[in-house]
Length: 136
Image 1 (spheres, helix red, strand yellow):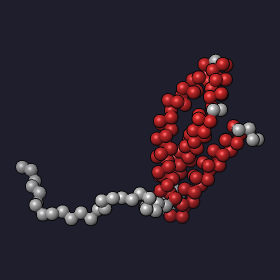
Image 2 (cartoon, one colour; image 1 turned 45 degrees about the vertical axis):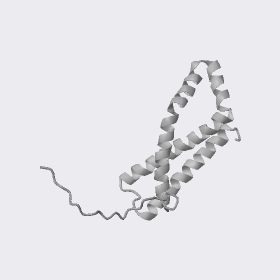
Image 3 (cartoon, one colour; image 1 turned 30 degrees about the vertical axis):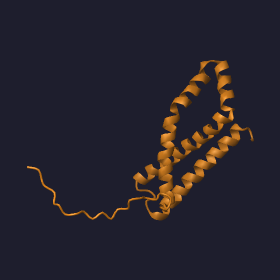
Image 4 (tube, helix red, strand yellow; image 1 turned 135 degrees about the vertical axis):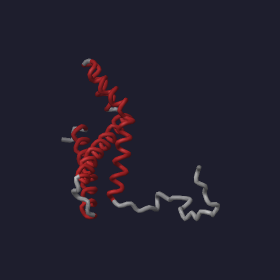
């Protein structure tokens, strides 16, 4: 015999419209969201990255073609974005592993580790970009 519901009206105090722009997330929240987004973007980019890698391994001429392709702004600029996504995903993953081991769970520690993830991932991306662009 199924349980019957009462016919009393249910009070719904939940908002009907959630304004995501008005929500003030802490820095750790942004790092968490960016970790998910970077993982998703890297997953979507895998076929193109594998194709470019395969082209570079075909022959010396394929390697040259791959090098010319990544020098095109329409491909090179997104590759720098993917580089940042990789570094961010890697650094945030290490941060989450440390949090799973109960390291840095307090509010100040979480804020500092989130800031470190952003600083390290952006710094590594900048260093790699400068190296690829042959600045040094």
